Image (cartoon, rainbow, N blue to C red):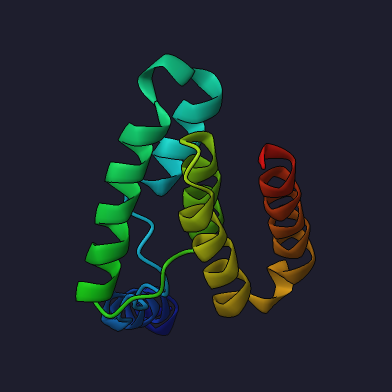
Length: 121
């Protein structure tokens, strides 16, 4: 009977010794910015998002953590909203380079950017 009560205590002690896994990405305010962009666009202007997300990229680099998937693409979209197509293209290419699974989408966005450039000339 004594062993029956001892087993849960040993299990609890072992669970307490487990270390928390290290973070793979530095998400920062990226999820919040994405949510605000759709739910309250007046609180998430492209220029404000650019400023906050650029700061998140710097924080990620300082912590030696990867930038989460989609952040570079999101920055690219915000730069496109600001009509800075060169900077948008840089971020789309960076997203494609860091996350190869995004290649198809990033190629389509890059194609639209170059198509828009041609139409503007």
